[in-house]
Amino acid sequence: MIRAILFDAGNTLVRMDYARIAAELGRHGENVFWGSLGNTLGAGAIFLVGGLALLPLLLIPGALLVLPLLWAAWLNQRTFRFDALAEHATASEMQRLARDNRGRFLFAGLGSAAVAHVPLANLLAPAFTALVFVHLGLAALRRQRQQGGVDL
Image (cartoon, rainbow, N blue to C red; front, top):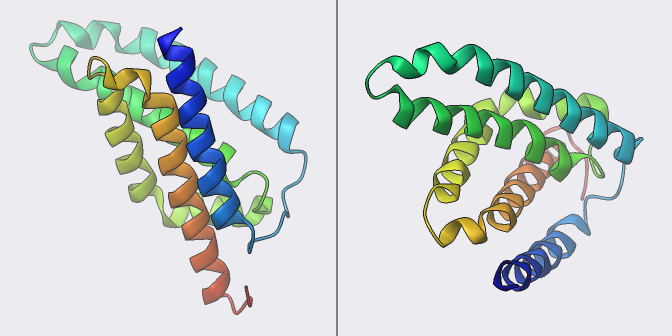
């Protein structure tokens, strides 16, 4: 029950920030639902296969502390980046944003993965991660369009 209340509050924050930032960018995304579904299923499959492949590496001392965090960071940046940009960026803009801002997205994924491992803070981790990626992704899209000479 508490988690549902906190998750709803987090979703409200995401919607408020999203409405403020996204109003000027317009909606240029195509096949948002199917693209998001395909991205999530693809990333989930890679995550599961990669997780199984990483199991032997967990026998290395200290790897149990680092590898799950890095793997969750990759999953966060892959799924949340797409969902944050899907409605507003074209496919070519999304590819360019992913390439040009790879380090920023990975760092945001790492930070949000770390929050998910903190007791009690993990209750708000999904909403926090969505908020971070919406803000980061749409700001990068705005910057990319301004550099390309698009008036917002």
